Image (cartoon, rainbow, N blue to C red; front, top):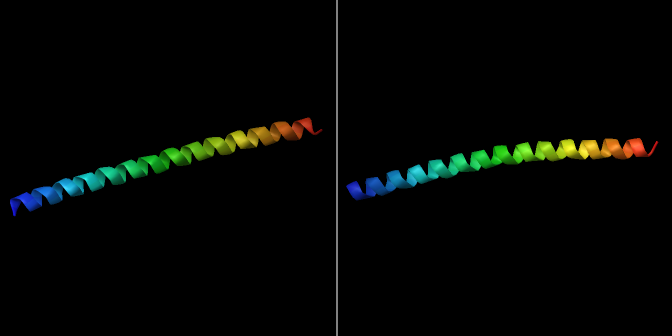
Length: 52
């Protein structure tokens, strides 16, 4: 029984680590998306200026 409890605890620990890694990746992706949107806006502004 102790072995099963130990295995369950290890699995729960891995699950928490995986969840934390997933959340960190979501934050990173959101940051990169914002950066790309800013670059896109800057490009559009440059293109609009050249159309004048």
